Image (spheres, rainbow, N blue to C red):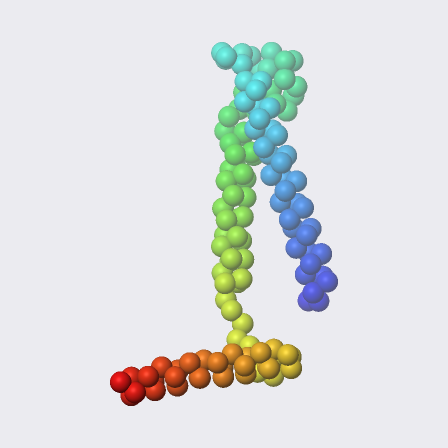
Length: 129
């Protein structure tokens, strides 16, 4: 799969995930706000809150399986993806000397020479004493 196709697929997946999560959260918020204080009949719930929300308020099992459970699954899936993404970023790619530019090679040589000179001067000092 080409990098462009992967990028399009990734952004599409993120868009669907965000849209579905927002939709389910909005349904949950509407359910909480419009929940009646006492048990009312189905006709009163539909009249007061509309057919979809009224039905969900009268059938909490349907509400759980259609809104709450998918939100839990999305949370778990997003956490797993986050952990995998962080692990992938944490793995460091081994760089070969051939991958470095000439400026980077020169800077690396200078740094190594400084370290070697510092080690040599430290090893000579105890001998002088």
